[in-house]
Length: 511
Image 1: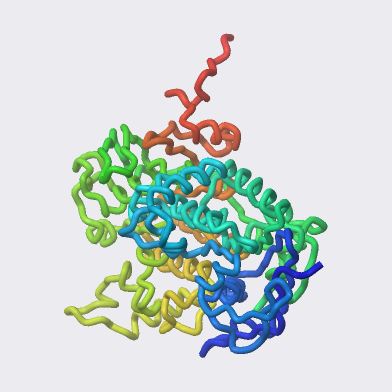
Image 2 (image 1 turned 180 degrees about the vertical axis):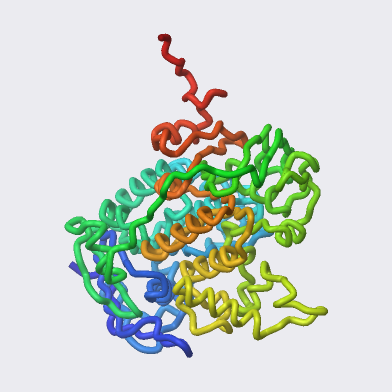
């Protein structure tokens, strides 16, 4: 059988690191092939070389048996290679249809593209509105755009970089059905994920990378999560210890908050009411696009339309307070979008400290203390095991998982009274995810009140003390995690609950 893709001795070196070191990779037609490795192992660089984004320093690439040099993504698409990036390549001011049109022949009418998008999205269970502007989408919805754009190209090879990181379990199941169908039709799939159970359930072959080199090839169906973890990071991830403990006083309260849509495609918030107490983690579950983005904007101060008394922090109404005021008084934020919101891509890690660490130690009389911010950044790099050449590394040069560790570390080291976190371990390897979750639990144990928005139900069940669900802008009652089940939370994610917290349609038993 002719191979679909073969890489021979691919090497790519940057000034501070060898990203790919004589990498060999073979993918057969109809094969779902996983590429597994910890953050910074060189996986994304290798995929960008295949897709023509990055040129290798040396090595050979064979496509359907013929040697090729792919000069650009457009050349890759003409060959039949599609890619879904972990960090999205979308223009915020264009609509979904306009973004997708950029990768299609200019002879196709926009209304035809909109119809094709709607049909493809419906076929694969990836809800999209073609006329919606990208800047109004959540991270999960942006990921759907990328997946649909790749599928519209009818690729012979589809590269997926962390495709399920912000998808719900139901959407993941639907995506897997799609990928298996594509593979049965002869499409090859390169699948990058840190979710070991997904790789074992979906993939036929797994190539393991560490430090830019291939360290092994295996059949993941014959492995366990523990054995794959050992292949990837050399050990099993540390166990998370979550001990129940009584919570303290309410640190952040939201009282009868209702807000109209900020734009036509936003989600209206309807009578939101909850509190987060000192020394507890409140987990917020829900399908992407159900109000999580809007809720975080209100809590962080990005959206100040809330009535003054609807938000109370340490007994003080703050609905009208700015983001800067809230940060200065002890509210930290880790947004779901790493590049652009969590970090300025073109700035160094040290200068990115100034997004949240503006104190007398770092800024005095309008002057930045460079030594102080470099020292703070270096401390986070060391403590959170961030793979970066140093505090002067540009944020955009880090892998997604390493940048996530840095942003979480930046907020954790502020010792906030309240920490708001969206998608804390998106695109992060198993070892780093365990470290981030342990740090969040340690912050809780130190008395911080944490609100964590995540579409990873396993993660929420692992670290949360209480759970709520956002569905269509409405919030469910809270329930202790120890009393909840994934089935119950799944029902609530469809909006099926009553005021008592019981699933809709059920009645309390009569004694």
